[in-house]
Figure 1 (tube, rainbow, N blue to C red):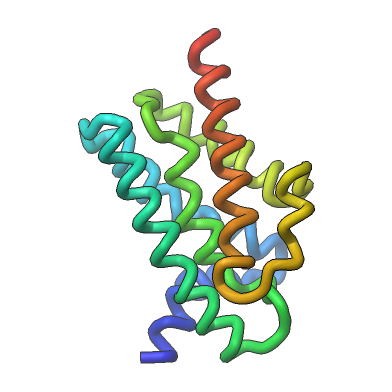
Figure 2 (cartoon, rainbow, N blue to C red):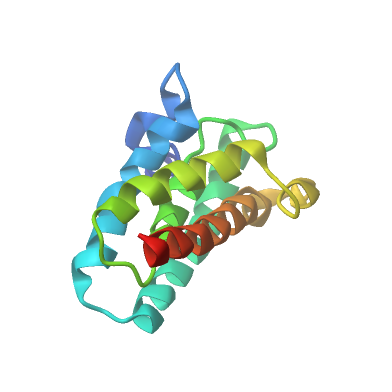
Length: 149
């Protein structure tokens, strides 16, 4: 079971990419985000699904961190791909996938406030919460972008 959790945590191997493992791993979330866009569900149901995905990411990342060692190892990417769908909640354009992906990566990499301030939280919650906040910021900007286009 622990090997399965580790496999999911490393994005089915994408987290072991020698180049930009976080970005490569986030690609795994594109089908999940696309599924939200085409689901026909309203934003309340989409939000509920995203909360569940984020909550699932916490123990997966926490267990994998203990197995791999170190604080928030770069090969763990479940936090990236399981929070990516947040960036498209309430949006219907396929282009929202691209902008959501780019914005999510920008905010996860640069960690603007308040994301940077929460980096000291340990365990699975600490691994996921910064990506969750990055996705929420990306969601807000994605809505602004598609509102004005």
